[in-house]
Length: 222
Image (cartoon, rainbow, N blue to C red; front, side, top):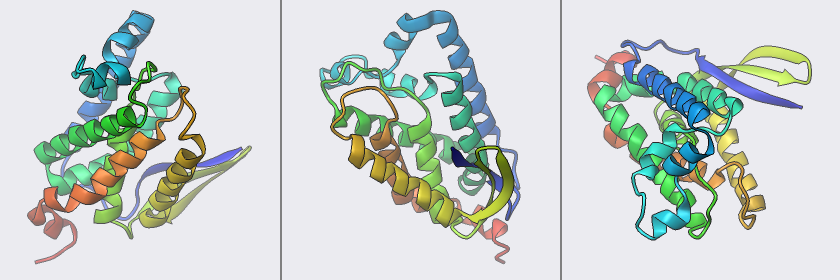
């Protein structure tokens, strides 16, 4: 068993405190504790259930579901990825544009997942679609930045540095391959199409939401 865990951008530091990213992490944690207290009823009330969405009910859950998680490992993994890539994109866009981008990416990702199985009664939840949008923006904005990454294989651990284009590109390729394997399986699990939808949204829209003045400062341009 092995894997890669991104820890952050080793090539540059943010010029502004990532307040929105921190707020998003706190909000996700708060909602997760509400889930622990509310149990299944809370999950079914606030997660996105495809058959409800396509029948015009509970549309607000497209938003609320992106702040919910299925387990401790689910939320910890998502928040690690958000902290690894979010601060740099927030710095490039500015807080308000970044918040809009994050929420819009999450909505697109959740809609992609709903439309992939429109008559499913399985709840869809998680921040990974919105985080995939952030990763899509990162690969467009800072493809050559080196990402400090924890590499582990069984009991072997090592910190290594991987270019963003390779790390994120490999991650996206795994989403495409796994979606191809499970596209016809009508059970719960990883929302691969949400990841693909969010990532595609991030790649397509990042340039329109970046603040040129912030990027000029970050890249050392006059």
